[in-house]
Image (cartoon, rainbow, N blue to C red; front, top):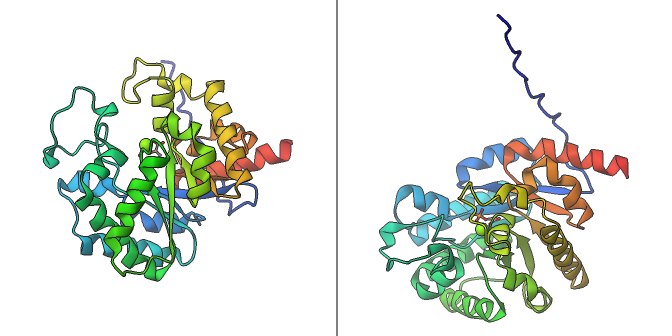
Length: 290
Ligand code: PEP
Ligand code: MG
């Protein structure tokens, strides 16, 4: 009987950092740090702080949060650390928070909106981040941000929680994952310290295509020219204001998009640790070709 031989994917060579594309990593908990160090990640580009609390089914105390953030900052020893404020709601649902039911959670009280309506959650996290920032700089990412006004409100709440805690080494930036924020990027970049493009949600909201629904053509939309024109515009705006901009959605770790990412003017991506060597290798191929 004819037996098909299984295609074994060759492992990408373990190449170290390359100057053209900085590759940071996404983590969910400090337990992921070892892998980040093994691949010589050039920073933590996205620490999704909600993942652990969604698994545990409860919020972490300020002290528990401080311990986790401190561990990450210390382990990275000066390399950049980007920690995202709790991004709850919709695909990151926390039913135990007992929020009022919603008809359409993806467009409901989630991300930045949820933090504004639950300041006590934001304030605990703000204090934990400030205490951890004594050990090194922390980039604080505001999730699902819609516009400048919302940034002002969240930032004011964040600062009001600190009450004398150190904040000199905290940097404040946003996820560009809602089209209105992208359209207001010029004004936002005047005020934020950095930006991160979240292609997972950006594609969902740009094309009104549910990221969790297999029938929306979501994956094909990742190639849509409108997405890449928008990413290029964001890169230009960031450059004009000399503010760092990274791309941390799943396309960042997908080697099929590395050429498009570089062509759009993005110089920093954040990928899953297992994708780092392949992304560096793909970037090297792109650079050698040009
Ligand atoms: C994104 O939306 O692209 C992103 C990086 O965040 P998450 O996947 O956690 O929504
Ligand atoms: Mg997102």
